[in-house]
Length: 354
Image 1 (tube, helix red, strand yellow):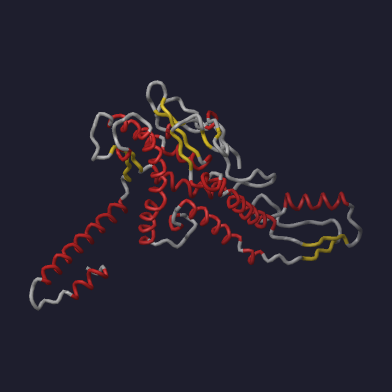
Image 2: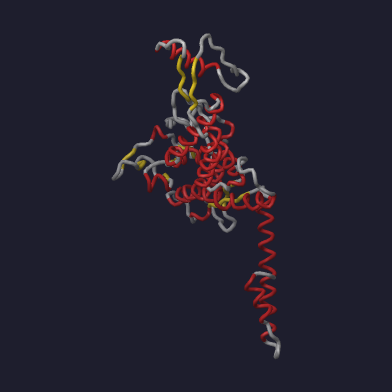
């Protein structure tokens, strides 16, 4: 997997990253000669779902905080919101994110090329104060994408194998000349021609014309038993699970109902987007702690906006709490009435069937 050494060179402004493409390219797939890099599309299928979710994250100043330092916290919040995708990408790619202020007091993300590594194990950024490390980097010594490298490599091999078997008809056997022997040069030329020109796609020949009689002994290759498509889905599922993306939200699942999708979206924001947003929130709160602002770190928070499923889930939760509160009040009243039996209402309250 390639490394990006300078994809986040900042212009020292907290500009919106959506208007600034990264300056270098990256592939998730291994650089194998003759290998088509299918894995890039599969991995981006998962990551693009996360990117779309992160666009609903909005960092802001907590309503409970008042004071002279609020505008400075708001500036930090605006920077984190505008550059969240870049911050998360670097977090996944390198396992480290460092931010700093320029001479004009504006926040920027420090490019990895400016990091000076040191510390006990030589794996800490020592020349910048406001730094965060991913759990994968802290405990395994590698970034999230490095931790997934073997899965991504296997995914690429599986799709390449499926593609190659489709193009080659899955043919595997022993070919020999009957009327005369084949020289090594003849064998290579013939096999190269088969590999290049014969297949089932529109640009390949479906027939082989021979000038002499040959004998072919088929070697059974149980392609169906390989279940390559199922294994591809398993690897995509593993990658999605690593990031906390419900498989029902991935187009490959093929069995999602409306109710499944609705619950999957709720789980997605709770188990994927919120934890990612909280990781960057920790960075921002640490920046507040290291500043001279007379404000608590909780002055910075975030919201998840424009997500109908979460609003509906919140409304449903509020309704259940309201009904439970009314049931509890009714039980207390019944206990004060001689001869009244609140057992039924207690059972309803305990079982959540209110």
